[in-house]
Image (cartoon, rainbow, N blue to C red; front, side, top):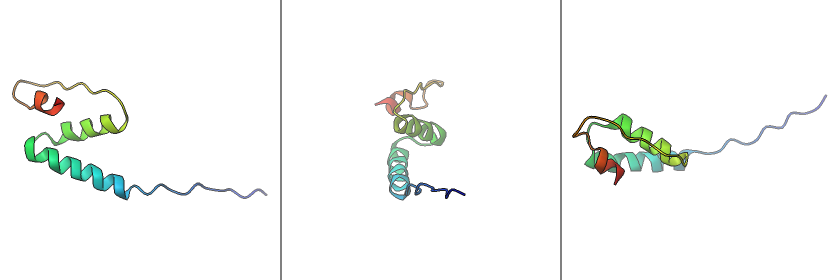
Length: 65
């Protein structure tokens, strides 16, 4: 019987701390848009594009900057 070798899990502690710091910093400027901020961070971390939609006055332009 062959022995199964598992890869060691990646420690995501530093990444989690960095994401929380980014979220807290953005949260000081953009208030009440937690879901949008989380999705923006996910898009940036996955090296993808994001499309920000919403009614006027919800900090879309400020978020993009």
